[in-house]
Image (cartoon, rainbow, N blue to C red; front, side):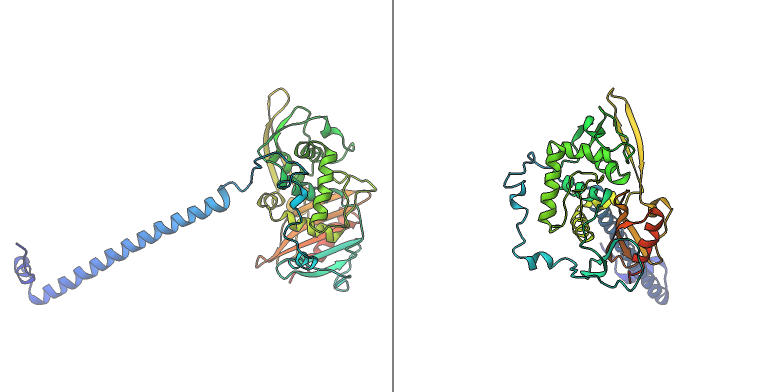
Length: 360
């Protein structure tokens, strides 16, 4: 039989005043208990949501695997559908920074032959100097090689290095892979971009398209498709050739297109990359490839309030010192900065800092 409040009070020996105080304390205790339960539930909900975000943004695979082999003439995977969605020239340019002439060149003084700074959020050209003159891009070429690889390659493919990797200029930058080494296409891509390995670029081209010539053909088709009509490639690495050229504006178009791939953004943000693979005898090989970007090596420092996210370097006697960067202001607003043919590496980074100083 359930006791009434008066019976409970008498059993516990409380006076009426003490009993009122006791009941108030009981109510407060229950409210605290309810509050603690709600806090605990909220905490677990936040932890679960945070865990999901970490998995979704950092852990889950971001690369897509082709379900059938690449064919340039295939109507689905080939070049037949590349121009879909661009119904007019105006539609193509509506999401891009547009340049018609030199812009804001009095703001800074650059000796580099060509340069530009593009505000991606506002689709505004902040600075432009001689952006339509064709020049040798050196290893900035590899941005297009990466774009084609990400679009048509399966990064989990295992690639056995052939003598094609050695068909490059002696003394040029390499990832130092050897004939018979077995690496993933992903590792070759990082080796090409992070340490600027020309040997890796050659193996990527041969594997993805069947031959280097076929891959270069694809590079040129992709360049035309994204509007880089003043560009022509003859190789996947950027070593000098009189018929291998692009412009600052076309580099912006190519870089901007490559940024649509999470893997590309990860690659250009790497100070180094650690790879494990096997040699021709099946022995384990471990290597760390270090970035050629002096903002990452500590040899150059960006202006205050500017964050260098990453990019691609390029240097040859013909091209001079070149650099294409993704940079951000302190609010995270993105900019693409490009310099072609600075006199040397010693002048390149001070000139790039001049360009980056225009970021508001």
